[in-house]
Length: 198
Image (cartoon, rainbow, N blue to C red):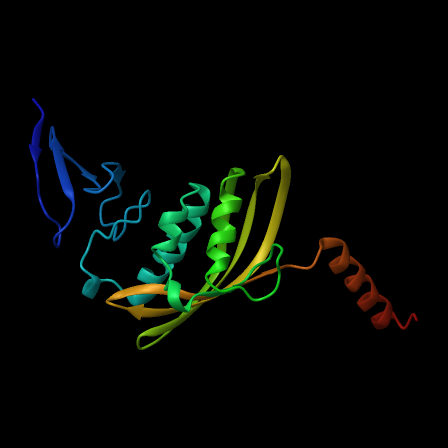
């Protein structure tokens, strides 16, 4: 017989026991989570108190939730992660010039026509300076927008501050990697220079 035991791990998860096997579930979305998780991998819900988690892990989670907001086309979730009054952005999609909070409105409009979005974040570096932080990562993402397929690899720098007890994104700078053809041509020129060719 299924015995349900509600238990709190440092304040926050459901533990279900069945036949001596324990399974953890997120109390926010109800999905099964890995034992010892600090955040739900599905909805980003914090499963431990902040004092136990390193700030870098909290910031990384904020940025993952930001990308999940794009994937789920959830402009409201994205907006909840930024400090809207101070927010600015350089995008790797037009318009390329500096945008303020109108960048969030532009993104919300783009999400309406976005499909099949997937991403992978790599090469993380996060530095914390008291109540501010810089996070750097690379991202590969793909999808379809207005029936046009795309595959993009970019470098992202995010500046965050702790506002009212929560880490919020203040500025994002997205910059595409040069095209592979350009890299190959540059590499060929370097070979020519090393071999003494003009």
